[in-house]
Image (cartoon, rainbow, N blue to C red; front, side, top):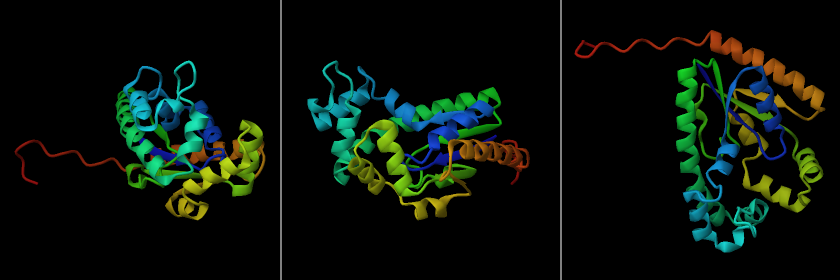
Length: 215
């Protein structure tokens, strides 16, 4: 099984690549989706966030006000670090369980969709690191248009993440997404073929010696 770490900054198109790979047959473990899951109402994660940041991070119906929390933490590195200290261990635990399920299913390619892969130095956990790369100004335009997020907030999130050069240096494969959606779809198809090829030619680890045998 090939373990792939897929990453890219806000507005890079990483989610589109992840969805395309899932459609081709990859098992996708989405860190963002898990992060939402562990902060649902009634979860210990949400209780910890409220204890740390106050009732003001909740909507009137008791759910997490994600845009409001994002505006709060992305303007303050210490607050962002405190949020990550709550969320990341819970995401890691859930991801581990999903990985075990993928192993049991005999999956050929497992893709970890991890926005902060480079920021958290997780490259060594994967056989292949794939970075979806898009110019910063294009990312700002896309996010402000598609999500209605103010441009200054998008720039703040970009500033809180690794820059393009740092991500590229950590990548085994860079997927350029400076063009159209059709261009990205073609590149995602090419990426899938390359990942399958790598999975087919990945060396099989040597069998462990039986207990009590000499090394």
